[in-house]
Image (cartoon, rainbow, N blue to C red; front, top):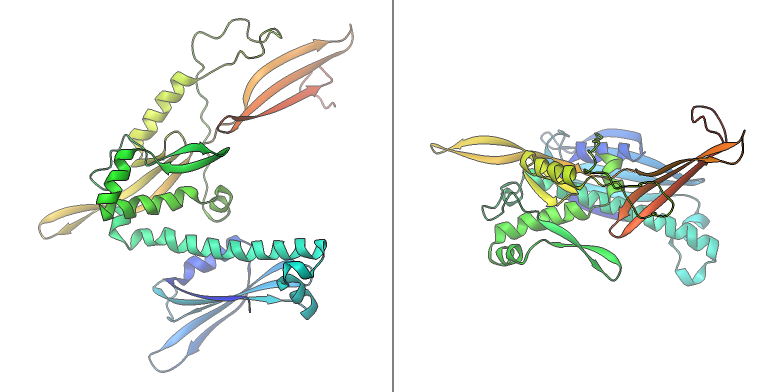
Length: 328
């Protein structure tokens, strides 16, 4: 046994998450402990490496998998004794190859723990009022967070000193900001691995006028920009969504339900949709190169804004003037 954890959550959420990650349902049993007490035992397995399987058991202390209940989760490494010893051995006692194998296994187990905790965190949205009630001090026009560069790394921080002061004086606002900070810091690859993702592409209009002599070699730094349409697009997102996590990057659109309490209506967020913006490749240069009367090629230069102050360049040189044909 590698580890055992207990959570208060919904069995169906964990089963769905593990199936997204590639786990296979091995066994499903309903255990009776008395006339009025029963539990569900679910056994899942993940073929991880040759001769190594990760077993994942969930015991829910309720027969209704759609209700919130106490869950006991056990993760087991299923392999031969020698392999298990290598996976769990101390760093100093194994060679480089075995160490890489052991590190990969530890990373897999750590990722399981991370996604479990993130799942609990996300679904606490519907159970804790401070997480789905927008603090009145929060201005819709301002984002909660921003990125700053520290030691050559982009670090997420609270956007303004004013918001920091509000969080230090208001517990509800602090809980709200802390909840969404974890949402913002969660790795994008994990979001995409177990969430429903819909992609929409938006083509922005270029700024006017276009820069002169755009594709000349003597002016390599001349670029086509879309700052005006991008600003309009950001303003539109700010109006359409409930609030902004990071300006120009992540937005939250909450679905609001109104409940009637003591002759008054109270609004709260029932669930939320997360909007994440990505900048796609931008065409920077397109040239047709002539090497002779019968030989020509096409040179295409693309760029991808990857991180703050970091851009990935991508060049394609095709040895033919006809881009619709197969060539090198």
